[in-house]
Amino acid sequence: MIQPTEKPRVVAVIEDSEVWQNIYRNLHDARTEIHVFGTHPEAAEWLASHKADMVISDNRIAGQSFTGCEWVQQFREDDTHTPVIVASTHMGGVEKARALAAGAQDIISKMDSTSATLRALIDEWAGKDVALQQGVSKGGISR
Image (cartoon, rainbow, N blue to C red; front, side, top):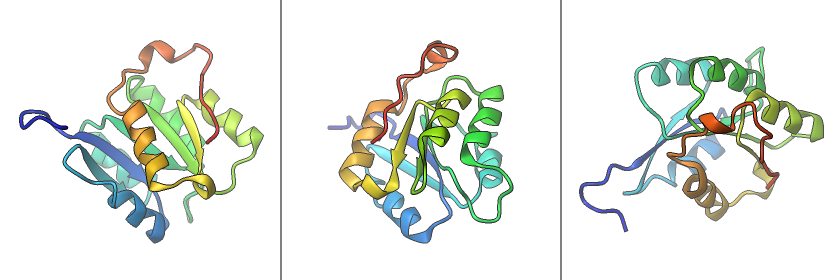
């Protein structure tokens, strides 16, 4: 149970699907503050002035010329501490390898995810300092 003096974990989510945006928003509770952005540039602007304990990024955002994996690599240039999870409905082995190589801690398949799975993922990663993992074998798993 969260103590009255504890701050909620802040999770930034980059997702263009309204259905998935609502799924993520429904994870908002006393322990977890969810901020949803429709594009990577929107999220980057917010992250420039706010601290997130974790970032979840869709790998394919409609209308963007770059993938979530490419965004993670760019994000890692400025932030090596915040855990990043890449989510996708269409992510094969090559894309999974790219996400981990770019600096993501984990990859999830949206097709196999439930609210319980997403909450467990937040519990596992939110607030961890992952700087020590950068450049070391990434232990990401496919869910």
